[in-house]
Image (cartoon, rainbow, N blue to C red; front, side, top):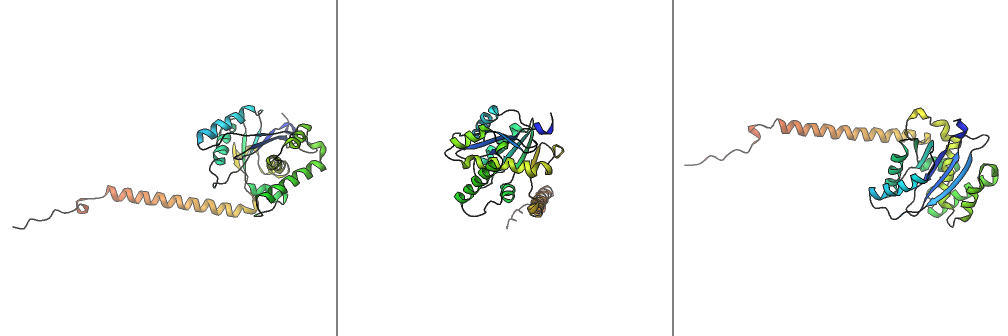
Length: 233
């Protein structure tokens, strides 16, 4: 298989709808977007629900070389379970790249902190602008799916995520990086390093405290036991 034939799936998880865009990010002269779809699942409230839903999604996808999964916020209760479940399923046969939202936001100049609706409108505008400027890059199947959607923004984030990989990500991340990779933002790399350092320090402190408690428990002697009161005659 040549690099141009590499097939990538870009997945945007959502409570109401999960969007998947398939494309060939290394195609020449432009990346090609070959299909787009949106799937809905029953409410997810457990790891089992997430596994069942992502199993259904995974079974309908073709064999992909790369899976781009939008990294989910820890503030959510269900979409992180979906991300983890799909990563587990896809990681056995392809590379899984977890993409922070900031990578796509920075690449396409999308607004920050301006409200949900404004962010979605900006994503849709960026997607439609690319399609207008690169009509040969987008298949009829993708155009039809976008045209038939009542909520076009469902597909926009997945579309831009795949475009980000085609423009930037494929140069940063290689197969040698492993099956599961997080696409760290270079602008936030120092913050990411500090976060990892802080996590490591916390873990070391917990391990030290655990050892101290074990040592104290193992070395307790008679002097630590409550003394019996002496009888007074």
